[in-house]
Image (tube, rainbow over the protein chains, first blue to last red):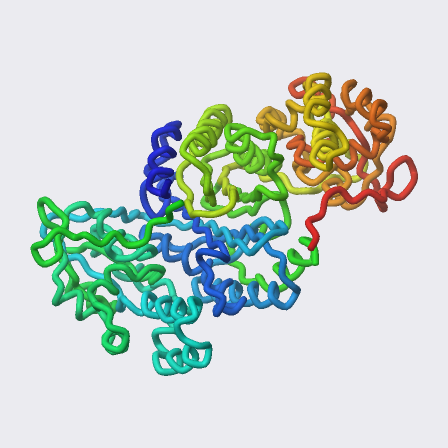
Length: 309
Length: 309
């Protein structure tokens, strides 16, 4: 089984709709039309075992669950309205205090009040729900010949997890891990303190479609159906420290960029890339084409991250 | 630590508000004012270990998470608009199919489309999020001299869990468990197939306040601050089979009614109980008073269910 099969089952069975449902199970978020506005609903779940590296502090974990959900709203072109956190926890008061402190600080940054949730006893799970509002929702789509671009840069999260796994699997000592973490500071920082790209709202009117990069570019870009990625352009979206890291650890930077998840960068399509560039730091990586899924003329094989069991 | 302390910490730190937030962390759901309408947001989480007796089928588990969330919306006086399910799961296709089949059937019953969620690999967790809409949200409040009443009846869920625990702890055999389950059919049925009280929306205009019974009457009624419960009235809200069960297992039916959780009945205040009674099956159990929390003139000691660790 994997999550793709689960979503298939869900889509086949959960077919009861009402007229205000613009978009159900199928995107970063659901879309309801309420009056003249569109309400966007997103949810994102993090389990200690699979989603939360031990090196994250409670503060960073709290910030992270909000970032993941706000990022989904932004990918739909929506302004955050409110957030709810359902929390399973069995930790002490200090941990919980720090977790909520992270949540609180980021709620101010995203202008997004935390309005509720549920609390139960259990191994750490954070299940977030966010609601946003927009005049024009963005879906995972683009027009033929649209540019495909990403905000900021990509690749750092893959490297940070790679490093963390070397340590977890006993291939480097904790001291070595700390030395590398110091050497590749910005790489570790992106894992610890990802930031949802609020600035995308400033250029929303120029975009044809968007999604956020949660499970790797190679998985997310497939939602846009037909595309070509240009390797040389993609390389330019990879920051210098990731290139050095790839050199040191013998990794292919293109593979790193394609499979780096939890980046919370926005992947989008536009025919007005120059206008977007005036407001937001972005890198073109490809184009929407008529038919096929390619990288430099060859079929894209990477698939990003899929939950399996 | 317990959930009450967690909620205290959350309330003290999560203080960032915006003007459309009518109610944050403090009720069955949060309330946002969008245009002239009130949007209600609720979340409810179920973990295999603590919330899902093994005897429930996948179908019943799917139905249950929706019922728990819709019940919170109804307690706020809101009509369900949509539901999202975040699911951690490591089961086979048949289990997942049945779970979504339960969800699908109940989504039709509650007129509530399922519009999204998140899927990850893990021990079974269901984290639900529902959005509703209303002209007049109901809070957990009442006026002095209001009647306090509950929909339908209470007590069965306590008995069903009691029976289940006798079996789980090896005090009765599985065969004995099945015999009792057959004898107390309606008691087991309430555990397996709880139904959120949609009919409460028909009498919403007559209510001053409401909440749903998730963690036992003794816990929920405290949200109304000052009240007196009348034991003789409360007894009348307990169905015959619960009285027989209490007799057979030497339980105090009043204690059972006070501590029976996950009933998904609505506890409410009104000064027009006769009008409510014309539309919905309800039982008066007490009154809102000026000061104090009493049952038959004595301080209420029971506290219902609180998550602790």
